[in-house]
Length: 399
Image (cartoon, rainbow, N blue to C red; front, side, top):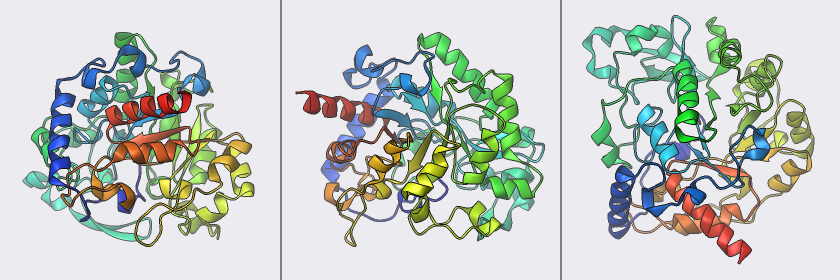
């Protein structure tokens, strides 16, 4: 996730401080050392709060900590390096897979179909002629696209850090890992479940379903086929599949019983399948009680932007929470908002400290504020921070 989180994804200038940057580097050092819960002294109990057995969504701890594209605050996103580290840091679920399609029909894990910003493809002269300009969900985009490559060709590329201005230390790992396939992720999930002695959960996203369907590379059928192959097509499967396109989620719901989530961007935005189908509704309509009841008829949850939970004012500071949490819970939907990041530019103005683009703000205070709304979980680029924030929140709540 998420193709529509523009203000969250890009390294725009914003407040952050040198002292916070020093703290960030110390935390990065701790992250590099840790495995199996040793990071920052986390105990086994802290890492696996709540059950991880085969009990379906009810077995997940609340609030659930979801490693956004892995531990993408510390490693290039959507690599097995990022996925492994997310588990080491105690993530309850790993968002292993923003799913896009290759020319020969394989599902691979990239943030977007365009791979110029997440791989070293520009350094491969043999692929220079693949660069093109195309229309993606109504916008003109220039770069290299997965549908123009076979899987074998993509496997010659290596992942790089997507936002180096905010995460210069992650560039240390540029070129280390290849692009995973979704089938490799499903096998990894089973292997990690055996190795760690607890059920590992994954949270893949179907990216731009309308775009790929127009090219004869439908996502839903391919996702369903692999879920069935690995026996993860049941309602109690340790997999949650998400998409920004409600009709895509509806289509997958007819193919598998796996838990499903509808992603929601800003209130004035329209899901692109709605644009294509002539549905005039916006996200503001979908978060009304009637819209939520409709979503609950085919999905188990929603993934709203954090701004739908607590809007910001013109200065970027938080205002009052909306009724979204209560409204969604009233119809039986879980809420897993996106995305918590430690770096100042991505935090509400209330919690920023200093001006350095890669420095950390008062992210623990931000977590407390969002957890207090009653959300069921949150996507985070730094799972270790999320786990500690949950422990702090519970101690304050229960104390």
